[in-house]
Image 1 (spheres, rainbow, N blue to C red):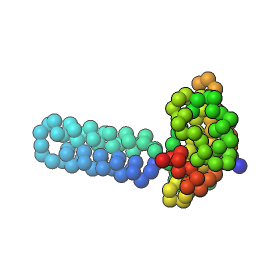
Image 2: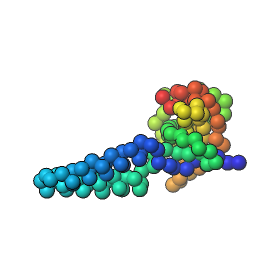
Image 3: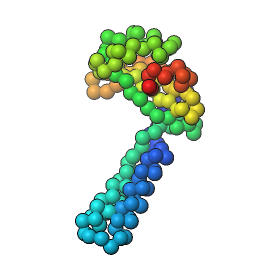
Image 4: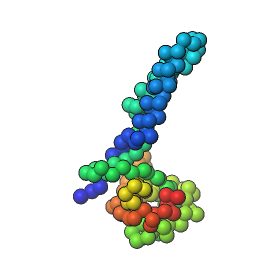
Length: 148
């Protein structure tokens, strides 16, 4: 079975959106100047938009686990060494080569709550990144260098 991650709302996303809506509502409800009421309406509008759009966490399909995502970019010349490192020891990836090219992308999905991490390497084929490897599952301690 292929693992798939879906974007979901985190608790922080919901709290930020609701806080904007409530604070904006308070500003509108208070009898203040027109400019303060306009700011209140803007805050309500921003909160409503964020509650509809903002999804900053990821969920592994078929489970209830919520993950964070980190993307790391490498030069195309590091493909073989990156595949070898990801398949055995992800902390062995040479992080000094990070952001020196964009031919490869490593996605790391991690959850500090469950202690799990999933890594996958993507290669840039014009206009999109295509997977080079399957997802590798590790304990979060083994990928601490990648998410740190």
